[in-house]
Length: 355
Image (cartoon, rainbow, N blue to C red; front, side, top):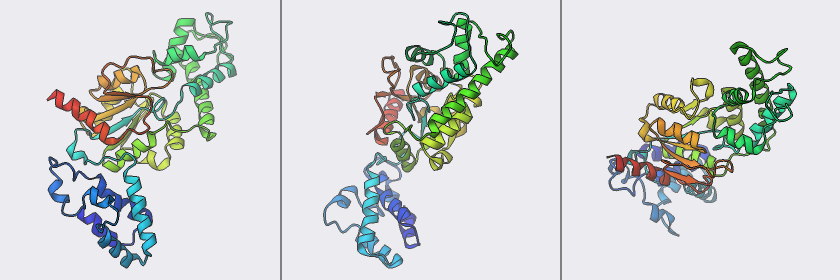
C-alpha cells in the first residue's frame, strides 16, 4: 500500500488518483485478526478520521498532489471526494486475505440480464421463420407461451437441449429447413443448429437495440468484487457467440475483457444442472471450489453450483421466484444494495461450519 500512495507523485490521471485515494477504505485495517494488518496500518489512516469534518488526514497527500500536478485545491478535493464516494458503493472493507471468498462467478441469463421473455420471443420468431410444425403441437405450429417457457427453462438448461426436449415430446417437426421431418441424428442436428443460429441472431438484434439493461445491482457487485481483489468469472449455458455479444453490450467491453474466466455452453459437454461448467471454472480460476461463490437465478443453476462444490446465492426472476432453493446461501429479489462484505460473510459462515 505504501508504494501505491507514494506513486501519486507520478503524473497520474484524475481517474487513477481518485482510484488510488479510495483504496485505503477497501483494506482490512478494521480487522485485527487479518495477517496483513501490520503491513498497512502505518500507511493508511483509519476510516473514521477520514470521514470527520475538518480532518487533516488528507492534508499531506493533498499537498503532495498539488505540488506534483500543479492543481488547485478545489480540483484536488474533488478527486479525493469522488474516490471516497466510489469506495462506498458496495466495495468490501476487508482484504480477500481475511475471508474465505476468493472468486465471484456470475450466471448470465436471468442474473446479468432479465432475458427469459427475450429468448422466448426469439425462439418463436425462428419457428415462424422456418414454418416449424410438430405433430402434437396445438394447431401444428410451434409457439412457446410465457407459462410454457417458464416451465421449460426451469426443466432443461441450454437452447439446443430445450428444442430437443420439446421435439422429443411433441414429435420432430416439419420445416422449410428439410424436405420432411428429420429421420436421423444428422438431420435432427441440422434442424436444431439452424434454428438455434437464427434464434441467436434475433436475440442479438434485441440486445443490440440498446433497450435492454443489466439487472439492478449487478454491475455494482461486479465492480466491487474487482475493486476488493476478488477474481470475477461468468459461466453461462448460452452459446458462446450469443453470450459474448450479450456481455459486451450489457457489461461493457472493458469489464468483459477483464474477466478472469468466461465459459459458455459450447465449452462443456453437459449443461446445467450438471456441474461440469463450474468444475471447469474452478480449474481455470485456480481457486478451490469452496472459496468461490456463484450467483444464479434458478434451481437448475443452484444444483450445478452446489454439485461443483461452490457456495451459491440466488437472485430470483419472475419465473423462478416460486422455486425452492434448498442449499442456497441466500436468496435475493435482485442484487441492488448487496455488498461484497455481505457475500464474504456468507462464505465465511459456510467455511466455519465445515471446519
